[in-house]
Length: 188
Image 1 (spheres, rainbow, N blue to C red):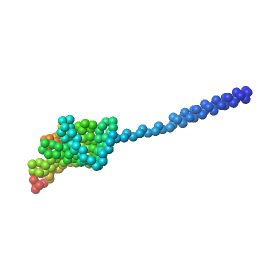
Image 2 (tube, one colour; image 1 turned 60 degrees about the vertical axis):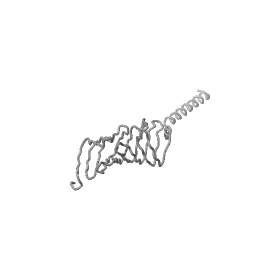
Image 3 (spheres, rainbow, N blue to C red; image 1 turned 180 degrees about the vertical axis):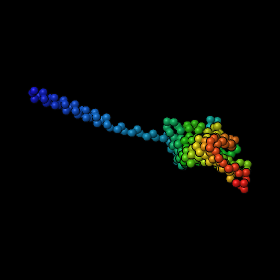
Image 4 (cartoon, helix red, strand yellow; image 1 turned 120 degrees about the vertical axis):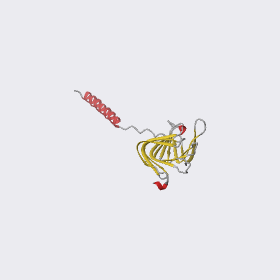
């Protein structure tokens, strides 16, 4: 074996090993994270009135923070206070967060949800407390599959799953219901 052949063989081996090492190193590198999607816009300390397709008020919301998803055009809201208008009065709702569908057809209230109905003829208001609640302003209805506590004056009801007809001011508990109905404060 001559010296030139041995030097060429060593050089080709070094190039091959170096290329293999670089290839293995590149495979082990973690790709950079995708850049976070930026909101179309952010609102702070605002009041917003959403209109339905006919131009009537679907709801009004007051909140310290809102951001719009650029892809789905939905809204994420923190600490919202909603007002849903009705024929017999407005419904008031609060939650930790909320999601609003692109055309405001659905409002999902999440975490610490409180929904208070308009006053009845006797002046009492019905209060619903639950973990999540989906409100459909156009259909004047709300629902959840979570545990719900309901109070109206001295009366108390609890159950799992709820359907509310906001227009008729009627509610239905679906499962595991219990309650105390008081005709007068003295009867409880």
